[in-house]
Image 1 (cartoon, helix red, strand yellow):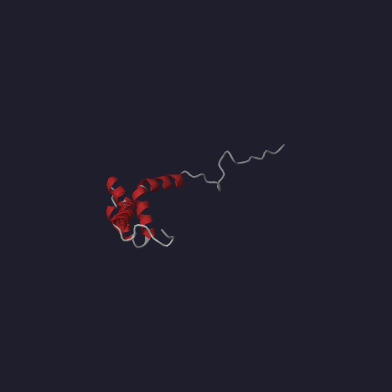
Image 2 (image 1 turned 135 degrees about the vertical axis):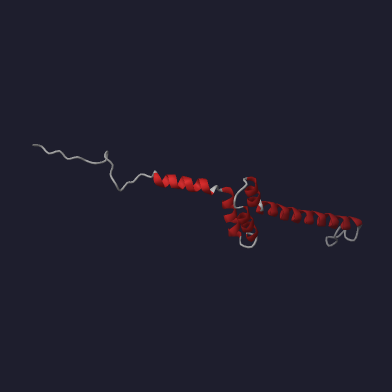
Length: 115
């Protein structure tokens, strides 16, 4: 056997190895496409499980997200964040924020004069 000879070329083993490699390649590509598809539809599934009132919008953004990926991120945010609670929390935080520009009664300094 020389260094230039290639084993299994032109034999049945060569054909079987090519068939196995083809099956593995097709299965790997199919699994990757299926995984990408399931991951990409994550916002739709989450919206359906929460019975979200914006299911149509999230579905449209998810489909548009195949072309423009930043739109998919917006769909994920809409699906996972409860906007009503977020707005209420933001409103309550805004209302109860300390007002540092106006002094309170405890912060005022009184000056007493000696008579």
